[in-house]
Amino acid sequence: MTRDSDEVLARFHGELDLVQILARQLARRIAAPVTVDDLASFGQEGLLLAARTFDASRGVPFRRWANLRIRGAMIDGVRQWGGLPRRVYHELRALEAGDRMLAAYDEEDAASPARTPEQADARLHAYLTGIATAITVGKVAADSAESAEADGFTRSPEEIAGAREAARRVRAVVETLPERERALIERHYFGDETIDAAAAAIGLSKSWGSRLHARAIESLARELRKLPP
Image 1 (cartoon, rainbow, N blue to C red):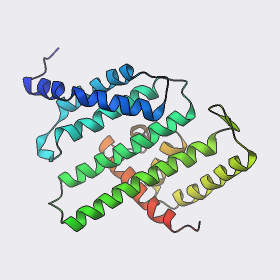
Image 2 (image 1 turned 90 degrees about the vertical axis):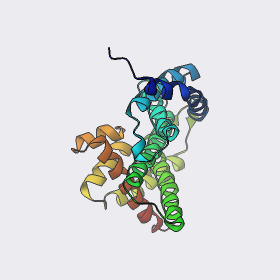
Image 3 (image 1 turned 135 degrees about the vertical axis):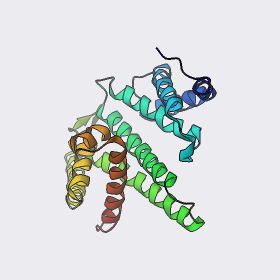
Image 4 (image 1 turned 180 degrees about the vertical axis):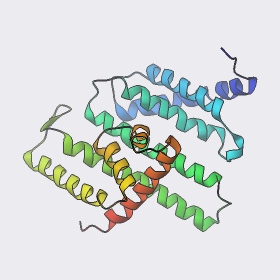
């Protein structure tokens, strides 16, 4: 086995505290039967991958680069746990969507010239709006698929009907997206595939899948704002 360079090992050991921070944050958020130590173990694998793949020429600080890879590894690890409540899968899907949008924006920013303060503000607004939209779509998809008794809570027929109507409205907007964007959103949010698996199914690389997801969510955000309350 090839030994990692001193530079890679220095990056890895220098951010081990970040693994613990993210493990505690994720444990609190998803409330799944996975311990902080389990999450930290998954996260260390992500940190090592981040240390090995980091490229300073991208213009993204290592801690930010590592943050996404650590949490991504934790999400993948929890997803493979099996037997988790659907609510937890919804939380994981929302987190993954947010991280992928940030990663896509990082890639675009690395290839773009410096932005004006106004452009930077618009970029931040688009990102935050996209995150909110991804969470909304994920919640609508999860709620519409749940039964009357989900995660120990009994839902009324009215609540179930409301969730299904919300899903119908969202899916109607999804249907208006270009073909590949529509397929990616449907597979990820309504079919429970990871973004990578959904992207591969339509012939896209992981990187292009992230970019297409961000573009599709931005389009959905614009169209959903047009809907009457």
